[in-house]
Length: 289
Ligand SMILES: Nc1ncnc2c1ncn2[C@@H]1O[C@H](COP(=O)(O)OP(=O)(O)OP(=O)(O)O)[C@@H](O)[C@H]1O
Image (cartoon, rainbow, N blue to C red; front, side, top):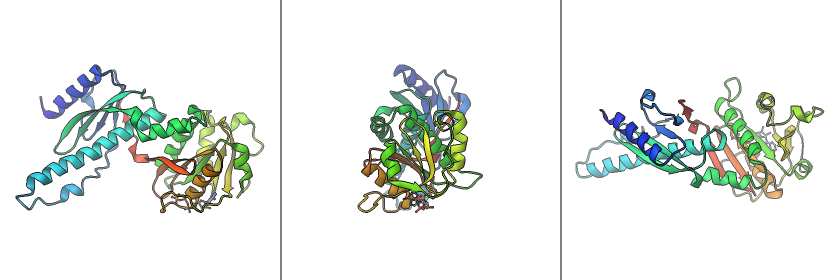
């Protein structure tokens, strides 16, 4: 039995013993080794540590220290991949709450880890959001935002923002930049929970401005400009005007915001003027079965 087989076997055994809700694999492991009923996900593996592994091991004295550091760096990046993938799939996919087993394999190391998803910052942010807007609506918006972030539209990256809840206040503090494409349509055709309506939302994400969505999940406007005072918003200085104003509207109202960055494919969640969580679109895992 080679090392990969042994690691897969112990991941499966651990998962059974702790009644894990899924197994998440980070690294190059043969998918066919997993014959089990549990869902198995493969985290995207951007090889972020590849540059670090090019550090030459030239000093004999520091060799062991460098190797240990390398293992720690590899493991930390891969464990983060597992944690992010688990949180995203719990948020918008079908992993149940509780523990997941991670199998982390890098060029030179391998480990089986147990991760408790409920402590993840993304899920903590979601819980806070869900005090204002129902979980199914937040999760539906998050799913669309991640799809827009990862696929863009016709090959080009797309940036947009969704302002959800406190409809009256948000409408008062914003105006149309262009004709509202949702104006005059029945509510049924504007509800974000209906799968049929999601394609048009992705299409309208190409428009400038933001989407305004009620806490019932009805899209009231697209192409909307937020008239907010964005001064003193304490978010990452590198973020553009739409992000800053989305954050500001959540400070001035009880709405929450989910943004998609055109420049980096990152989805962010804002509440009470603060960034609560961010998700890199390539953190999404691929389910094997
Ligand atoms: N207050 C606002 N309300 C709605 N849309 C805005 C607002 N301010 C800027 N925008 C629009 O957002 C678009 C993107 O602007 P910008 O690049 O500054 O911000 P960003 O979306 O935060 O950054 P990113 O490039 O990461 O997506 C612009 O076309 C601009 O018209």
